[in-house]
Image (cartoon, rainbow, N blue to C red):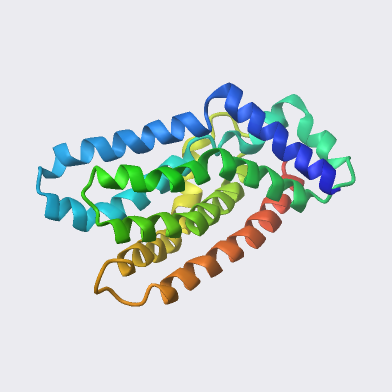
Length: 222
C-alpha cells in the first residue's frame, strides 16, 4: 500500500509540473499580490512591515486555493478515481496522498518563498523566519481543509467558486492562528510557542478531518 501511495504522489507531482498549475501559478500569484501592495497602501515602510506577515498569510491562503478544484475532478472525469476505489487502498489514504502531493506542489513552495517576498515589504528578519516557519503547518492545514471542498465538488464542472465558498470559512481559524504565530515572532512580542503549537494542532486536525471527510464525500458522490 505504501508503494501505491508513493506512486500516486509521484504521479500527481508530475501532472502538476506538466500542467503548470501547481508550483508556478501559485508562486506568480503570490508575487503579484505582494508586488502590488505597496501601490495600494503607499511607500510607508513602517506600515508595510507591520501588516506584512498578515499579507503573506492571506496571499498563501488565496494561492492555496489555486488548483484545488482539480484535486479530484480530473480523476473523476477520466475514471481514474473509480480505479483507485477498486484498488483495495483505503480511500482515506488516497485522499491524504493526493493532498500531500498538492501541498508539495503548491503549499511548500509558498512557505519557502515567503521570506524572499517578505523582504519586499520590509519585514524584520526574525519576523520573516517566524512567518516562514508558521506557513509550513499552516499550508498543510489549508491544503487538507481545501481537500474537503475539492471532494464535495469533484463531480461538478467549474466548481472552483463553490469550493472557495465552502472552505474559506473553515480556513479562517487557521488564518487567525497563523497570523498570531507570525506576529509573535517579532522582537518584543508574546511567546511564539503557544500560537505555533495551536497552529500545529489545527494542522494535525485538518489532516485527519480532511482525509476522513474527503473520503466520505467521494463515496457519496452521484
